[in-house]
Image 1 (cartoon, rainbow, N blue to C red):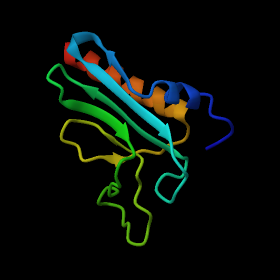
Image 2 (image 1 turned 135 degrees about the vertical axis):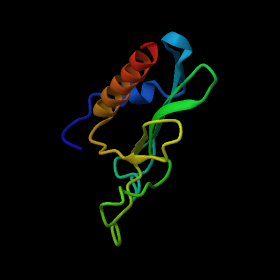
Image 3 (image 1 turned 90 degrees about the horizontal axis):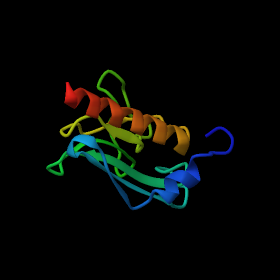
Image 4 (image 1 turned 60 degrees about the vertical axis):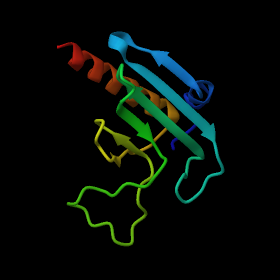
Length: 121
């Protein structure tokens, strides 16, 4: 992370929030401080998810488990990334380059806007 993270307190304040969105979508935010570790270098455990009106997760950013990098990259001997995003309901996750909590919120809400906009078309 580079410098102070102005979005960290916002992210932590949103912990436990369930926010209704247009079209029956809703999102859930969980975020808390944890001791920094090999898997959570920044010391924040988070899960930001967008759900459809049936409760199915259609998008998410989290660091609950490791994900394998795309097959074109060899990962033998490398640390598997825990920060990742799920681009669809069936996506097992792709690495996400966590920079700051502020950027995480920006990226997540931009994707939420995109998904809802595409669903209206």
